[in-house]
Length: 236
Image 1 (tube, rainbow, N blue to C red):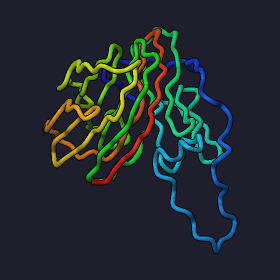
Image 2: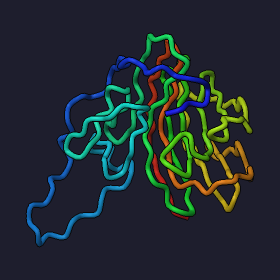
Image 3: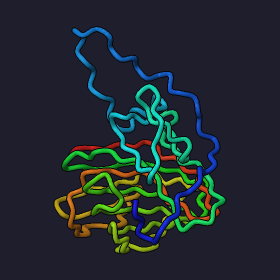
Image 4: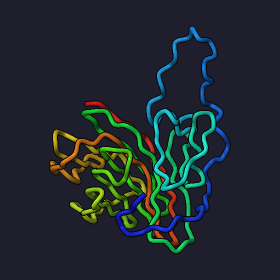
């Protein structure tokens, strides 16, 4: 996958810590009775409650690599991504000399949507947490990216150009906790609110986002420990 900041060598497997590696045990078994009515798929983020990143909900963006699948759940631990107790975890380090590596997962967005979540940042060295909204399952498609950076700073960028239209928004968090972040699309405008405080209001956008991206970017000697909590996608 072409990256916006220059050529990226294929990274070696990055080391990971503190993500449970056992296969999910709470995933409901598939029905073996052909007369049973199939249950609807668990909505995105509800699968995390079973420590699962469901293949029915998510599509990994893993550069040129592939992910193993167990019990209809992706195993993304080699890339520092895991689901545990209803949360999505990014926990990994890199000792490589690299320009950048970017990993994450996509899920479809409904029309007329609001996106709500909280996030706790424990460690963010030479890294960014990426929350993106795209028109395809690709970081190279048109989109809007919210990049959470070290030192309590947010950037908001147009993709794939990564042109910043809101730079170094500083938020005062309690021990790296960002609560009640709301991202809303109204018509052709973008609104971002944190704990009821408007961060960006009525910014015009040229896309109708169809895909949500949750992931990270890591530079050389990077480290990230972050947890996305209380994620909810609402239809308005």
